[in-house]
Image 1 (cartoon, one colour):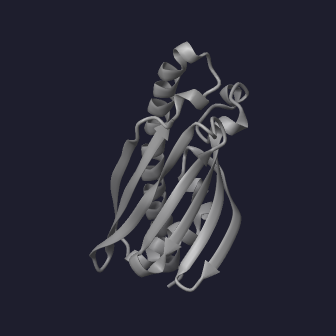
Image 2: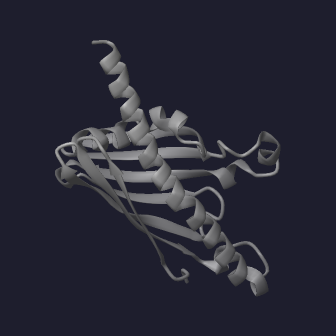
Amino acid sequence: MVGPMTELRADANIPFPRELVYRTYRDKLPDLVPFLPNIRAIEVKSRREEPGVVHLVNVWHGGGDIPAAARAFLSESMMSWTDIATWRDADFSVEWKTETHAFTEAVRCGGINRLVETGPDGVRFEIRGEISIDPKKIPVPRLISGRVAAAVEEFLLKKITPNLMAVSDGVRRFLEQERDKAGSRV
């Protein structure tokens, strides 16, 4: 039995055209790593294109701002996850599912995000999703599994929403840098 679903919900405004923001999110994630303080790397594992749809599988490696000494005590699986995404050009949306590398069977997380035009040079990135944790699938004694599940869920919620917002901020900063580079070549 999966635990109760907790809603993930956040909006980020980005002052660039929707098409540009959409393609940056979809196609340039590895280029955003320098703008993401909690991410060490993003690996594109697969990309499959159909007319108007792109299917991506990316592996994210977190821990960018965790001191190296602390990383020694955390397993790589606790700081990495796989993002499975279907990008739909028709409505500027992405349906996503995150598979954690720790407690894989216990955690369910996914949703649909949209880019909504707010003007000719502005977009709102609407992040909508859910997370749930099945305490029975966390390898701890049954008497404390509910408390552990609640702690894991709280930890993930504190990490996921800020990281989603950090990616939006990273997209904005990346696009500002690209604009500034283009302007300096004129």
